[in-house]
Amino acid sequence: MSADSYAEESPASEFWSGARASLPVVVAAMPFGLLFGALAIDNGFTVFEAIFMSATIYAGASQMVGIDLFGTRVAPWLIVLSIFAVNFRHVLYSATIGRHLSHWGPMQQAIGFFFLVDPQFAEAERRREYGTLSFAWYMGMGLPIYLFWVVEAWLGALFGRLIPDPHAIGLDFLLPIYFTGLVMGFRKRPLWLPVVVVSAIASIVAYRFVGSPWHVSLGALAGILLGALMVPTVKKDTPR
Amino acid sequence: MSTTFWIIVAGAVMTYLTRVGGHLVLSRFERIHPRVEAGLNAVPAAVLTTLVAPAAMEGGIPEIAALATGVVVSYAVGGMMPMFLTSAAVLILLRHLLG
Image 1 (cartoon, rainbow over the protein chains, first blue to last red):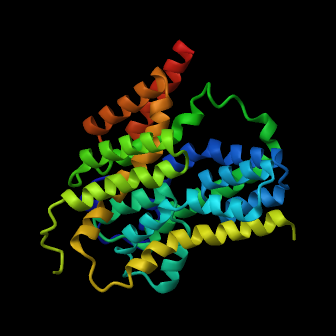
Image 2: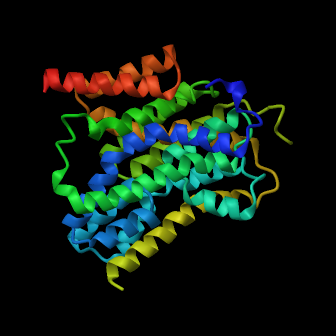
């Protein structure tokens, strides 16, 4: 994949290029998709409810938190609030990638934002560094991840008992590995290393003393503030 | 429809609002302050790091070694797949040897 091959492709080849980028995500997310389906059944969901949750919320970590709380019989509004808290980082994704989607139609934007999961955001941010971020490429990446995610909820709900020990074959740690790869993909950006170090330290401290999921927002806030305050802002493409 | 169904619907609406909300708020401004711009450009590294850091901190030797390998391969080779595959291989191998 060379940077110069990105410009001016047909929608079909853009779509397939996006689909190729989805491959490691599909692999890394698979155990979690299946696990979600299995845990949902354990927590009293019907098979339909498990599939419905993956298909409509489509955000792994918040779905896990959601079904976890169902088991404890907390108030419904508190479950919804928890889902919102876990997903709050998407506000930042939306603001960041939204700046580069102005050539999409309103309907394309409305659809595109639904699919804005962590890897989708990161790969789209990288993609737009090399040229135009097309709707075809975006959906080429998003649709396989989405379809596998929904089918996995169904399979996990039906056959959850058959899932082998995920630890022995490393399945439980594939997402951190994949996310590390995504972080590395941004290493050419200004202040990348300081942002990573500060976010890592802040999130670990917040994880210890405030708790999950707030470590994500607090840790990210530290890194973003550092970026905002330290990056030289006189750039050629910034209208003043 | 069950309570569960409506909780899922509400959760889905809230999640969609987070995914569309940042853009809706930001697009109301005609000019984006350069500092905001710089902060947003730090978003990928900042947020994605927080998704890894606690897991890395709580990891044992196989987990740390796998992530370290991934970082080195990213620097040396670049691209997602080489990094992802070597890192996963190191993880599985060390878990079997040390587990």
